[in-house]
Image (cartoon, rainbow, N blue to C red):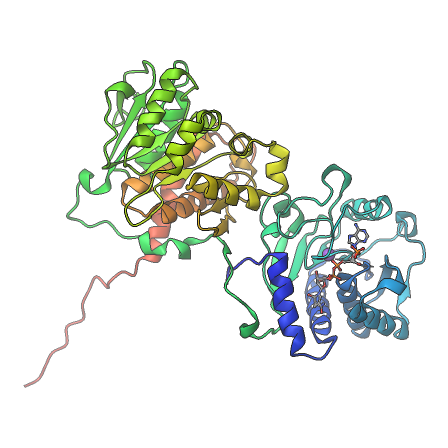
Length: 523
Ligand SMILES: NC(=O)C1=CN([C@@H]2O[C@H](COP(=O)(O)OP(=O)(O)OC[C@H]3O[C@@H](n4cnc5c(N)ncnc54)[C@H](OP(=O)(O)O)[C@@H]3O)[C@@H](O)[C@H]2O)[C@H](O)CC1
Ligand SMILES: [K+]
């Protein structure tokens, strides 16, 4: 299961489920899931202190925490609760959980400042301050508690969502005025949430576990968002036929490389070759080098003399510059019927020129298949949307969806938790990748890989999903080998991408046995 649910969708599921259950049932299930998971974490904890600090907020997230507190206490675990709630305003279920905790004579810490907690050591902190109901930046008093928790060395288990994080967007609520818990583990309920996987969500959520709380399947509607994985492009992962040749795997034409900017298109072109394209051309905007000494198989041309026929996949933009000449070449590329990946300076040109915007929007294949992929980083996305990078980062899923719809192009919004949005409103968040990718040239590598998959006949949707997943998985592989995240260079990702790609093809192909058993038949 890799569906992602917006807060509104979770609320809908919750309402349907609650209508068929006794009040308080879901909170009991949530509390017991937290208590069970906390006990697992305590078994592997190294802290000598047996105490668990439980932070309970004003809403039902706090109710879940109080319920867990009762269950842990019953299990003989020492717990201390800091309750940050106006008891007169608690929702009904949370009020019930509080009454139960008081009855069980659980220890409540009266001092609600970090001073009331200092000097204590904790085996585990359970964060039940806020879940999906956080609507504004936490007060300075709560921020002080969050800072205190983030300074601890013990495991921190967040209930549903790390408090302070927006579950839809993964941004910190209130931006610079906000703060969010840095969880080592998050136990999330009913459905997985996009905000746990993108933007600040990746840093704050730690290890994510989903507990659907035994809610009936009938309460769920299909969602329009999912966590990317090979199952979404498995149909395109095919073994190569022996009887094939370079023409079977298509041509990529990388268009870019203004004077002095040859490196970016070379990175894209090398990746296109390592990603399996049959032939790779570089079409330079200005005079480029004659050939790539390290990879002389790449064919260098002058863009003005290259035709952008429908048979090749185009990767337009790396190191392209924003000259009038670059504009004309981009305009010609957008007019072509080829599948196209638009990146870097080509995106900057498009954001400045309504004519190019219309051309990008109007590219379509008979039958309606989207034939364009755009791969902006947040600043490029901001230029395309005529907004600021901060606005884009504030709601990455929304920004990617807007771009996809506005430009009629599959949009790969790069960054922590890359968002892939489709013009029809569907969206994926990519779980692979790490900060090793935060270095120059990795975007060129991604666009080259997208081009390679398009050249090999992959549908645009599968190509965007697979390229993003493989690109991130290559970074994960290099880090696992101890080569990063510090100091990896874009070139080093290219052979790792080839290895990951071959591995997933092998993993997804059902091999026929090489030896066929001979059965004798007796007359
Ligand atoms: N309902 C159920 O049976 C289940 C709920 N689950 C858990 O519940 C939360 C969602 O609960 P909810 O009460 O809707 O929301 P929260 O607990 O996240 O918080 C809402 C309260 O917090 C107040 N609030 C919001 N922002 C702030 C802030 N910055 N400072 C202080 N207080 C704030 C808000 O007050 P308002 O004034 O905004 O109304 C609410 O009082 C969910 O995440 C689950 O953990 C379980 O899923 C089980 C079933
Ligand atoms: K929480």
